[in-house]
Length: 184
Ligand SMILES: Cc1cc2nc3c(=O)[nH]c(=O)nc-3n(C[C@H](O)[C@H](O)[C@H](O)COP(=O)(O)O)c2cc1C
Image 1 (spheres, helix red, strand yellow):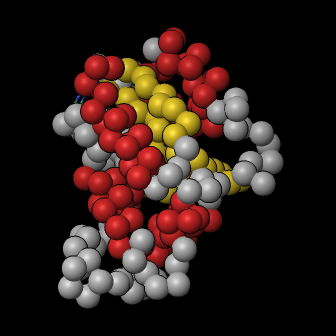
Image 2: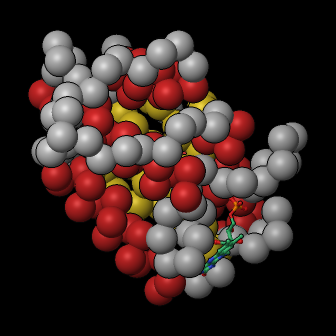
């Protein structure tokens, strides 16, 4: 059974759906009805910064109950990870970068088969920005992160963003969204 985890990295205020989430929700409409969907908004789930203790302590504890534990459990529980991320300065928003940094800790939690489990999941990327060319470094980063964990990268869906509602006018993006999860 497929379980899609949508990690939304826009920093729009609560109740304001940004272009990237709107485009991802449009794509998700094509998922089979029996697909489980979980949507998490990083902007409303603050977590502690990652600390690199790989070469001191060497291992990491399980995160206490809290947003980080929610993110870890959701990540472990999905079959498909969808990064729903606008382009910020040619890169990921900082909340998504921090989430990815914590993967480095999750690789070193005793008893957690993070690496083996991640290799069984697919990664997808939905993104918007002012300009497609400016999105390429972030798309490359996502693809490289997936490859590092041996996750198949199932492609990037890009739309033209800007003020909320902009992507709804990008007919090419809407058509691509309707096809994006067809193979899922
Ligand atoms: C902090 C910040 C940095 C941005 N950097 C870029 C950028 O490097 N390149 C670009 O084309 N657009 C950039 N943008 C524009 C956003 O990618 C665009 O408005 C996007 O659609 C916002 O997504 P959202 O509506 O889902 O929040 C930036 C916006 C913000 C707020």
